[in-house]
Length: 287
Image (cartoon, rainbow, N blue to C red; front, side, top):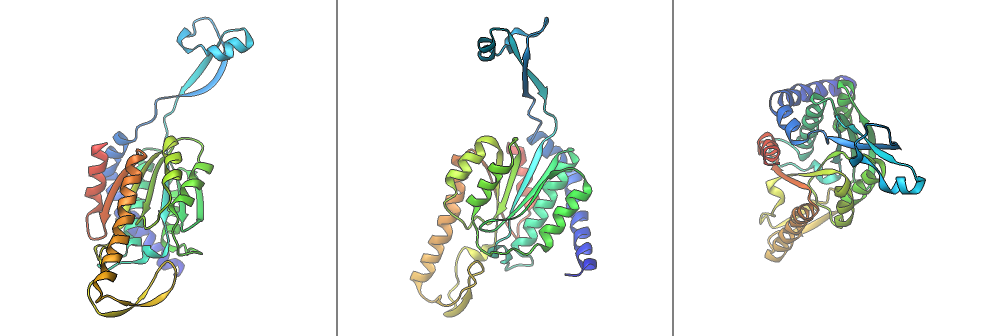
């Protein structure tokens, strides 16, 4: 993609998603993800007039002199966008690919965070972390994120949600609002999600296409696995083949819903032909 075409695409997404975030999401986002009030800053010696309820008794006992905990107001938030860029995101049977919707959702959330004067960071992942952009503020930073979402080419086409969550826990030490945007055709991420959700406010946004749910009976069909690159002949006329495919698909979807729910993380499901704005607003209002 040449620079002119890329800038045109970035501008188009900016106009659409910024309008959504300005008029729809900013208020809902703000009320759903408020600042976390007072956060611990340091321990210092007790001074006349300090609230005795803030005395740190462990430190006081250690030094045999009264010490108090000092707190400061934590106003700004940090949003981390974790975006799946594996091969399956290139699927699309309607007017848009999953990747297009994923980019729009990520951009909308980024502009909503900007409205709230929050920092935004980006993690692009396949079966490993392909790109990490540390959290920063500002329009130019958000536009860089959108550019990467549009043009970044992953080295791998496979998916590993667990690897991305592990990277998040290792790099993001302060609590963050985290949106994991993926089709969640992955498994074995229960433990890493449990660890990450203890520190962060995590929401899984599953973007999917209705045609992925089942294989139609089309007889013998040559199919390409977008994640492995393998081409194989599939007998879609076989009821067993179709049932096994459906079971595999729904097992992954149910795993996602179950694991996120058990970990106390939020869940949003949106089809590519549905209005993701309605889905996200409904989620914000229910928090």
